[in-house]
Image 1 (cartoon, rainbow, N blue to C red):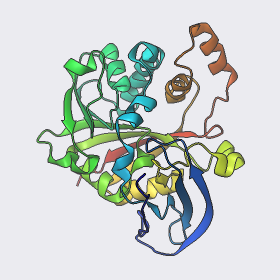
Image 2 (image 1 turned 60 degrees about the vertical axis):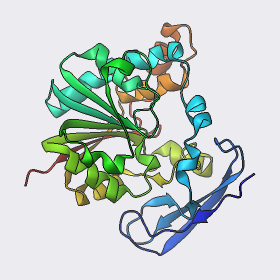
Image 3 (image 1 turned 90 degrees about the vertical axis):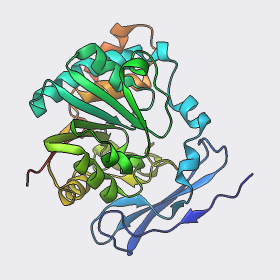
Amino acid sequence: MKKIQYVRLPCGLCGGRDFDDLFTKIDRENSLRQPIEVHVVKCKGCGLIAANPRIKDIYSLYNKDYYKEEFAPYEAEQLRIESAVPAFHRIENIIGKKAGRLIDLGCGSGVFLNGVIKASDKWEMHGLDITNFLRGPAKSKVKFHRMTIDNVCKIKDKFDLAVMIEVAEHLTDPVKTFTAVNKALKEGGWLFISTANLESITAKIRGDREAYYKAAHVTYWSPKTIRKCLERCGFSVKVKPMHNGYWREFRMNKSFTTLKNAATLSVFNKLHFRDTFLIGGMNVFAQKVTK
């Protein structure tokens, strides 16, 4: 078994090197099949919470076992795909665009993209990830780019909309990554982010038991820190809670992909809090600032 090596880095937002240690937990359920320490710290300069030191070879976590465990069989993902349809229409309404060129950053198995395919035929779709795991219609209808998100600005085409679904927590150098995304967008283009909100009530209650604290997640966001980071990278930012039936529905369906009874899932959704600043999530709409 290869020994896990760790690296200590400056703050990914402000570059500071002075941190408050919050806690350390052991991630035993990772794709490397060995215990990995997750050292969670808070930057004294800007307040960003991150894993530091973190595993040095972060990309070693994204092996075949990671993708097998992260994504359910395609047949079991249908509820998530169906949920992505109304979610995407709401994104269209907020950004004021019904057509254009779209890229899913960290597209994984293509759940979101397959939802877009069902929702509209007016978007040219691209997907980006370090491994091509696309399934379903997305496999043939999406132009795939095998690369890290830091390199998205090297793609010749410019995009009207980029999305990150549960990806922002994986970013090791968020300023570099968001700057690259900004360059990849057309003037006035949009970046949509769905991620956890560690200022939510449940995140505070759960503390170090919060599921987002694991080896593959290295940056943990609050509305304040993600806004600060995106504004530094040339965006104007709106942070919204995940309302019932909005992107939270997509996230909840991910946890219930094996449910046979869609009515049961619908009742569950209605019973949950309407505002998931309570239950842990946030939507971020960031528009490229026109120079």
